[in-house]
Amino acid sequence: MSTILVTGGAGFIGCNFVRTALAQTQAKVVVLDKLTYAGSLENLREVSDDPRFHFVQADIADRTAVEQVFREHSPSAVLNFAAESHVDRSIDGPAEFVHTNVVGTFTMLEVARHHAAKLAANDRDQFRFLHVSTDEVYGSLGDTGAFRESTPYAPNSPYSASKAGADHLVRAYFHTYDLPVLTTNCSNNYGPYHFPEKMIPLMILNSLEGKPLPIYGDGLNVRDWLYVEDHCEGILAVLERGTPGETYNIGGNNERTNLEIVDTVCSELEKHVPARENENLVRQGTGSYDELKSFVSDRPGHDRRYAIDASKIRDEIGWEPRFDLSSGLAQTVQWFVENREWCDTVQADNYRRERLGLTPAD
Image 1 (spheres, helix red, strand yellow):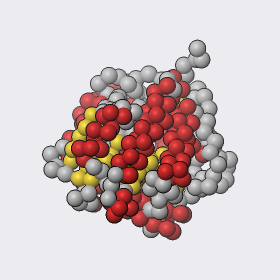
Image 2: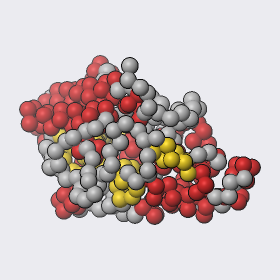
Image 3: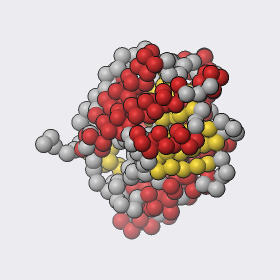
């Protein structure tokens, strides 16, 4: 039985990938996760009893711990999801982003290359290191065009700069050490288990609680939205059929302004919990979810537009997203409405209650 090592597997995208891998492959899945604020065993509760699932709590930058995992489980593939990923948090505290995203990726690469060198020839040929990255490394687009795999890097936040650094290390380990790496750069994800301080779950939960819906700037920043299940299936396709050394952009073909996303969330919520039946809104005399919208000061370095050209993964690997924004958001809103207990559990320390990303320079 092959073994897939998933770093950051207790986080949003990672935990969804764990489900995909267990459902669509016969592999053993080992999750390595530090369990920071955004990683929770609650995200893995439903697969915790699967005999092919194993969990290890450790920091990917802790080489001793990582080497122990490789010795015990001898992975045939490494999926590196582990990352500090919230741009606002990177503005307030960039050091953790450098530690996890750069030093952590370097540590994983080092251990992986030594591991691969000891494998038998056939196993070494089959070994893969897949690094999951972001479209934010490319910077900001104008009104037209889309990011391609050849787009020059131009990161504008500490988060995207740390991910860009990790991407470059992954590339270097292929060209210098012949480590069979793959890199994926995705657009904005959304879906079940999304940490509640991120935009879409924040808008859903604030709406249900009758709290303001904070929209940065004029609300016209554009993102390409990718349903997390589509993303995970794309990653699995790259793992199975991608060419070592190559990068694959994964996008949802769903460009929307932030304001359009908020409007759609409000409309979808009305189907599940009509405003007139929401006691939190009735109590404060609010007649609709739209009335909760509130424009707030923009965050520093806020990229205006992202868009992904996903033609390479479509043409070379045969992957395309199955969900459009309407169907994906419908499932997402329904999931959050039906899983308030999960939301309460992962918010226990009030992480989403304050505005982040406005800390003045020291």
